[in-house]
Image 1 (cartoon, helix red, strand yellow):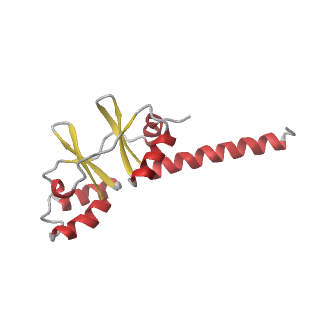
Image 2 (image 1 turned 60 degrees about the horizontal axis):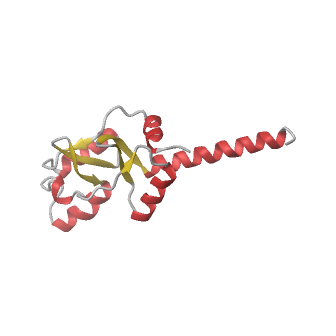
Image 3 (image 1 turned 30 degrees about the vertical axis):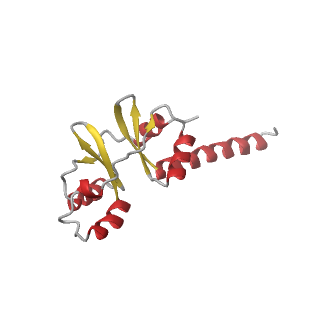
Length: 145
């Protein structure tokens, strides 16, 4: 059974995309676009201070009555960040994302941040696993069982 660490390895991303809490939302949008990601970890002093997603930006910036050029990341980030351990099975990651209605999960190994997995990563893994099982069953059936 695949675990969160395996999923990060398959992504082959050597760096963690993040912004500081004092960055503007406009800067965060640019970082997201430049790195083709839907969420950024908000890091302060080497620790996770929060997470900001495209959804946060769309929903919260307008509610603040500010445009994204002047709003700061710390004003709209989600401070209580849910995360998973590197050894957590992918199915548990998917269950947590579904239950909490979130799309991104940081992966930690003890205190060390390894990366972030998205619901897209988790779903791709589930599809790949099912396709492998189907191909094995087809091969078994063709071989005469």
